[in-house]
Amino acid sequence: MPDLDRSRNLWPQVADDLRRRLRAGEWSPGERFPGTVALAAEYGVAQATTQKAVVALRADGWLRLEVGAGNYVADSPPA
Image 1 (cartoon, rainbow, N blue to C red):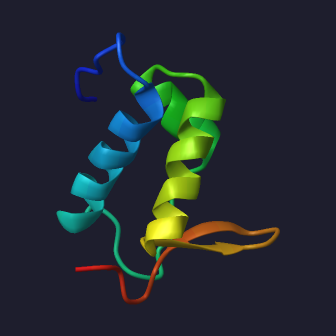
Image 2: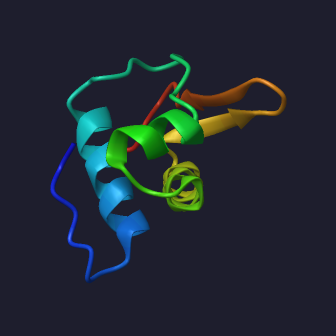
């Protein structure tokens, strides 16, 4: 878990770290992405914080949502 600067908004910091981890190949394309509850526990933040981070990752093309099944790493993530 990275050190988060608690004097700044947390969700962009979490999103940046998740992008870094995705670029590093921690999750493969098509793999199910961890849920917001698990991410919140990992980062020590509220679930709403990780939800905002995940929404940002979907907007950037890193993740795709399968309704009823969760988020998955995009088959063609951004470069």
